[in-house]
Length: 584
Image 1 (cartoon, rainbow, N blue to C red):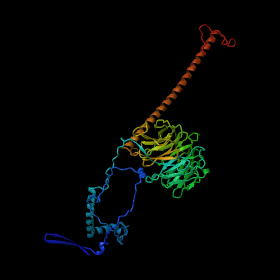
Image 2: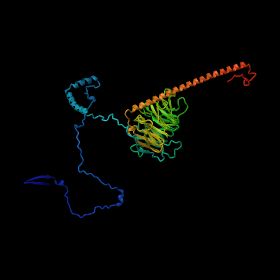
Image 3: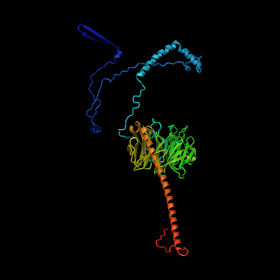
Image 4: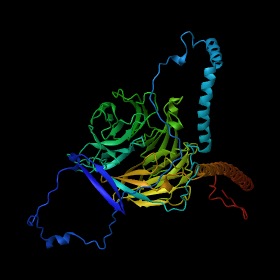
């Protein structure tokens, strides 16, 4: 079949024929007249009008052609091809021993004189030259904003709430401990739930703690079950699938999330703490299985999770040259300060500096820092300057230096009790404190020291735990009602400012020097007071001797002048000569 279209122009006719097979035309279209019929009848329903809002005006854009954009790139096209070849060690011939330097040098000289080799190198050199010229013209690895630091000093600090993790148990328990996953790309945190009040655990209370995923906050990501409620939980920094936990009954256990919800192993209760285990820390070791635990029973235990039958080592917390046993409620271990050094925060308000491998066993407990009037709930070294550490207890937070027994900096006394806090991992001058009235304070010593930079009312309940992710932006605050609020800080509170590290170091050294001068002056005044006291005592002794000598002299002169004897008349009844005075 064919169609022919003709066009007449004057006397000449132009024809153009479109040729097509009949089967490609499709089926014949047949049109017939039919009566109308109702396919569907949709009546208005006035009662549905209340569910809708009229949108007026309505703007609708319709394009009949797809949107296109012009793009041009001035690059060379490269064709890739997959080829294979047989390759031996170094491509050396069989008669050349590549382990012999003489053979290699001799063969290289021979090849470099070959015309084919020179020709191939010349061709490759041209291609490489083009690539080098391109790289010189445009550095594809250039960091355009390298070294540029955004200035956040003018912006108002803030923190926004992202989500709230709530204890899924029917009987709500306090979030007593929070530990973030060391892998910053795996945004998960483990929260230990417990009721720490003595004999306040109701019947039927859950003993489970949970791991939460920030991306899925509606339900726990993993459940940690144990023989007793967890008071503390910590991720293993070498293997994030392993967690250690201290329990309310004093036992120690560790979990491997690849092996199930129950602990892989727990310590026997007769070899464990006699009080709740309030804090734990993983130690720096080759195996990554060593950890330590503290409790208010006055002991520090070292464990190896490969065999938890009994502690590897123990230490009783007694102050040096003292008999008082201290109960531990917090601990600090940082391998930067020394793999065997750690600090203990006690419920008596004293911080103890300890060394597991001291030369003398009596020196395992070293300096004692007195300053708090209540339990030291948090204790942490500054991540940028390890010789400075912060303790939080009673109504204040204090910054100490290892070599001094008095704090170099102290926050003002608050109207409510402080229950925890920590340093920022990304800014040396920023730290956090939480309070019993449900408020979170962010202190920025780079800008001001007298008041917190930001105060956030997290909840009306008592805040019980706190931790910050290693990125410095995400913080989790636990409360007594079992809620854990995930908050994101502004970039200004997480990004180090220009010259901040040097300025904070200078400030800490200045305060240390000032405190040393005050301590030296106090010693001088004390020694001067002692010397004055000795002089006063010696002067009083000399005056009394002189007075006694004068009395004896007067007495003897009276007796000689009167010629009387004491055997005859009592000295009290004796008549003295006129003008004589006897003063004893």
